[in-house]
Image 1: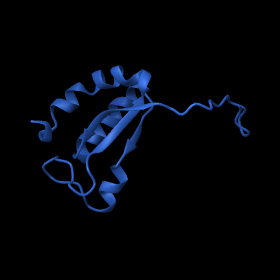
Image 2 (image 1 turned 120 degrees about the vertical axis):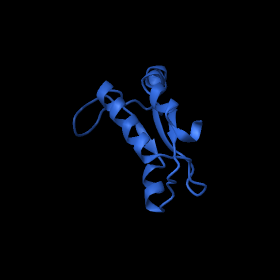
Image 3 (image 1 turned 180 degrees about the vertical axis):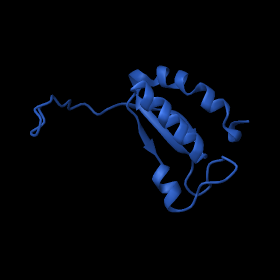
Image 4 (image 1 turned 90 degrees about the vertical axis):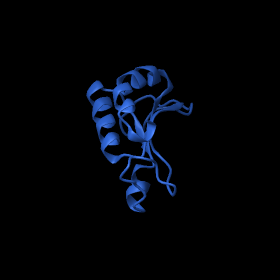
Length: 97
């Protein structure tokens, strides 16, 4: 199957995503996204817009009881590399202490 606009091959298989980072901190989420973008790793976020919409982000970095943590997901094949890149960010999360 090919894309009707650009002709690129499209896989009929669903993309397997793995959560590699979760936090209640908007600041740490931004840092993690910059790191993955700089490394050229594609990712998607979950819960980021919802947390901002309902004001569910807590100042102590803990996940909101309303929305849960914000998450970053990558392709399963990129998960180990992404976790390694985000190790220091994860260690600075006050909610994980």
